[in-house]
Length: 242
Image (cartoon, rainbow, N blue to C red):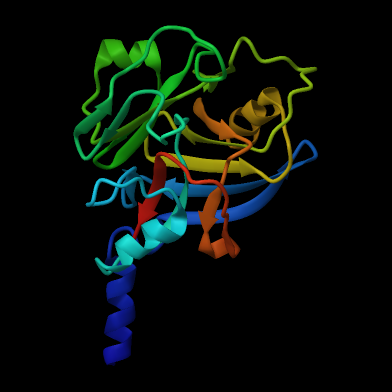
């Protein structure tokens, strides 16, 4: 009987049962690892530095920090572009504290390929919001990370993406539903173009908004898939904590 009640409690605790589901899938000949998150019950957070003001940098270090609090990472991935010192390139907000201001101008590289966007985490929801809309509406995010380019904007692919592009990298990003309750993190298992990656979110995952996090250095922590990628130290990390 005691075991029955323990199991029942686990089923009723928000963020434990059914909040995260990871799977492997194929779309148009490319392989992807996809993790779907229910933002109504999942504890989605951004991480950059530890209590000693040192950049965390990798999944193992972050999981160790959480383990000391009796928690763990259900999933995690790199969450935006960063400079050589691993500071965020664009707007970054963690726990209500702004680290880097919003950048609205075009610039070199993928980040400056406008329109770009912001991944905004609020209580019970998370949204990908195009940068100029984000500036106008000024949503009350708890955590936020700006990156770019946008992959999908109001159901349409970024206008600068080319169907015949030869630029291929392993890429990762995030897409959100219109009501902000469905959040999908995805990483390609092989090199893909921006157009192919955008079509994954628009056509296969049916998401109206999606944002590119990065390429080449893209990494995923998904214990359910037996995966925790290692590599160069990261800047911002997004994770689901349980």
